[in-house]
Image (cartoon, rainbow, N blue to C red; front, side):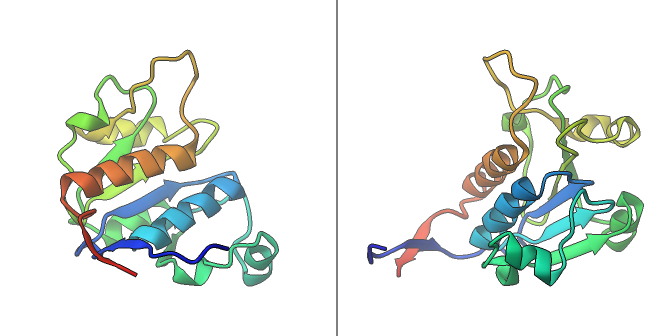
Length: 170
């Protein structure tokens, strides 16, 4: 592996929170966990999960950075909300007509994504109609891969809040 300096930036305080509601595909969650570790963004997983996250399963999946993830596990979205009552939410759905580029992201906000197969529950989207955003696409695909969608939105939120300004090279 080549040894060269890596561009680094200071972590955002408070960080954006990544919330996955009932994720189904372990590889997507693993990729998202890596993005969270790279940006020091806590990851909130809302059960039920479509996979195991015990030490043996994580080791077998080759997630050698899992220990760097600030992981929080909740039995339901209601439990997450009860534990984070003042956290502003941004929900993402391919069915929204509002672009994430128009969202007002602030440090500490929760970026909420749904299951790969069906997205967020309709009742959750209906509870926050003015907080639902989509990523515009020009192709005829149903939606963008979950791990890609999280990275797109998170890095745009970080960029807008000037959190990607390099402060040193390691």
